[in-house]
Structures are given as structure tokens and as C-alpha cells.
Length: 245
Length: 222
Length: 49
Image (cartoon, rainbow over all chains, first blue to last red; front, top):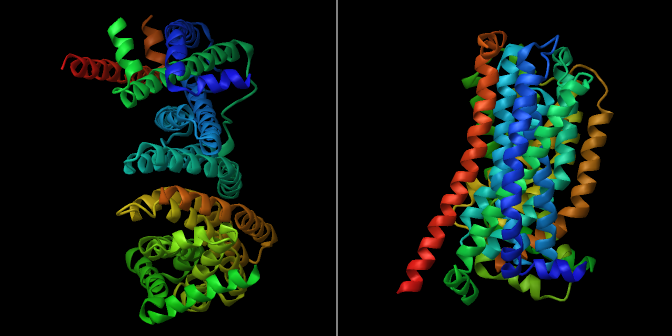
């Protein structure tokens, strides 16, 4: 196990290993996305309370889940980067920040599009939307400082510290925001976001969640391979690799 | 051990008192920003006092942010931070001493100016003790968390804006609990819950932040 | 069929949400693979020199 992980932490080995995975991941993403979209849009019945607009949940909820999952991946990679200083985990941190911000923005936009027909307004200072917005700020801060520091290794370690500090803070922020919003608008919880989920709605949601998950790893691998290729462009193994193709 | 800690604090206070004019800056900033709100929103007594807890605390966050930016700047440039790292004493303790000194210089004067702010914003006298306690519990958290961001941006030119982006989201829980405690006390409601949360946050920050700050400084030094 | 696209009059929101999701996810992949090509081209140019 440890040997395997140590091997993976070498850029060259990781590049070769991830190359085998990329076609599978992108293939599965396309299949799951098509199934999920078809199921969510055509097969799943309309909600008796929210009508057709509840279909937005099939893209909104997976995006929101991913926005948190990616942060956890980033923080774990950041911890590894700080303790063992492996280059692969440093690249995971910086690429996760970008992909995570993308999912968070997507969750916010689809949340707003869901809010307009449901609440009658695009923006409600609801606990979940507010936490999501703060999460976006945390991601943007990490991206900003990472791009402000020129030395990529220093930048990665700074981003790692922020990711680890953030993961301690996110539960506190989430708790405080939930507490705050229960204080200010108890009457806006009329339509809970997840009413007792019926299987006919749960299955397409799970398929979409799986599709987003596979998409994330596919994109993460591709982006990491780019970064590795760029950093190692002057080394012999990259030159040999290209000469072979 | 305690001696070294106190020496760091004494040294930073001495440096600060050499530039006495700058000592008043956070307080002045605090008062000036507060006067902007009645001008920009409305001077109505009822309206202002409703807004006041939030105003006082948003201003506190901004003042803390601006003052914490330069906490390591001077020492970083003249190399005294490196000297601290070379000393045989635990670095987290020395760095903690610097943060304490920073809080004594910027946080404590706020305790003095708060009654004036309460007067300007029509916060009733009954809420003043709670406002004091929130400042007492909250500003050390702001200094500790802000110092992490300051340590990360210490080596960067023009890191001020960046520092705000990094640190302000982390300040949100303090803002929520502190301003809610003040408005609850204005309505005569119980505030022990909010104060307990602030206290817990302070303990957590006291335990974890010194390590995060020294790790960040080590990275910034390269 | 028309009813399906109409979505109870919520067409803008439902199709907007799905559209932006597809757009963002596709854009993420397209930008990444364009960068791959760009880097490969750069390295090849260096090799030829």
C-alpha cells in the first residue's frame, strides 16, 4: 500500500498511471450524463408541489455535493503536501481549487434559477445558499493567492495551509450561518429543498451525482496531466515520451 | 519560557510606542468609518440603533483586517523573523507573543472607544457591557486568524486586498455571534449562547492558530 | 412534445439550469484539452530546435 502510494507520488509514474484512467473516466461521464439527463428530464414525474421546476434539483444538488467533496479532497491533498511535500498532491490542491470553484458557481447559479420560481426571488439569504456563497469566496481566495505567488511550490504550500485552515472553519461557518438564518427568517422554510424523496426522483439524482463524481476525477486527471507536462517539459522522460508517439 | 514570551511582547510594544502617532490610527479609522454610515444611510435614531450592532462589528472586522496586515511586515523585511526561527525556543510561542502584542496595541484601544461608538450609533447603555464582552472575546480571534493570512501574504507586494479575500470569510462566525449578542442584549434577551460560542472560538483559535501562523511564516520565508 | 419544452411555464429556469450545467462542464473539458494540445505543441517545437 505504502509502496504503491510512494510510486504514485512520482510525477512520471502518476502521468503514466493516470493516462490509463482518463479514457475510462471520460467515457463513463458521457454515458452517465446522458442517462441522468434523460431520466431527470423525461422519465421522472413532475413534483406535485413544485411542478416542473424541481427538475433543476437534479443538476443543482450534485453540483452542491461536489463543491463540498472537492474541498475535502483539496484539504486532504493539502495536508499530504504539507507533511510529505509530494509534488503530485501539491498539483491536486491547485487544480481542485479551480474545479471546486467551478462546481460552487454552478451550484449557486442553478440554485438561483431554482429559487426564482420556488421562492419568487433569485436570491434568498437562506442558510444553504449563503454557505455556498462563502465557500465560493474561500475557493476564490485560494485561487487568488496561488496565482499571486510565482514560485509554484511555495504557492502550493500556501494554498495547502489555506485549504486545511478552511476545512476546520467550514463546519463552524456552516453552523453559524444556519444558526443566523434560523434567527432571521423562520418563515422561508416553507418549501424545504429535500422533501421526503421518492425513489422515482432519488434514482435520477444518484445517477447525476455519480456522473458529476466521475466527471470531476476525469477533469482533475486531465488538468493534472497538463500541469505535470508543463512543469516537466524540459526533462528527458517527457521528451522520450513524445519521441515515442 | 514565560520570560522569552514576555520579552517578545515587551519588544513589540516598545517598537509600537516609539511611533506613538501610529498607535491612534486604528481607533481613528474606526471612528471615521462609523460616521460614514449615518451619512450614507439615515441618521434616524430608531433605524440607526437597529443597525448599530452590525455596523460596529463590520467596522471592527475592517479595522482588524487593516491593522493585522502589517503585523509581520517590518520584521519580515529587516530579517528579525528569521532570527526568531533561529532561536532555540518554540517558534509558535514567540509568534504567539507577537500576536498578543498586536492585540494589546489594536484590540485594547477599541475597548476604550466603544462607549463613544455606542453614543454615536444610539446603542442603549444596557447593551454596553455585552458589547464590551464581545469586543474582548472577538478581537483576539480576529488578530489570531488575521495573523495566519498576514503570514501567508507577508512576502507578497500589495497583499492587502488578497488578505481581505482570504481572511474576511473566516471572520464571518465572529461577526454573526458578536453582532447577534449585542442586538439580543438591546432587546433584553439572553446572550449566554452567543458569548459561549465566541469563547469556544477564542479557545480554538488560541490552540490552533499559533501553529498555523508559524507554519505559514516558514513557507513565506521560503 | 411542446408541453415538454414548455415545462409548466418554467422553461427558462429548467432549461437555463440544464443548459448552463452542460455549458460549464463541457467548457471545463474543452479548455483542459486545448491546453494539452498547446503544451504538446510547445514541447515538440523545442524538440525540433
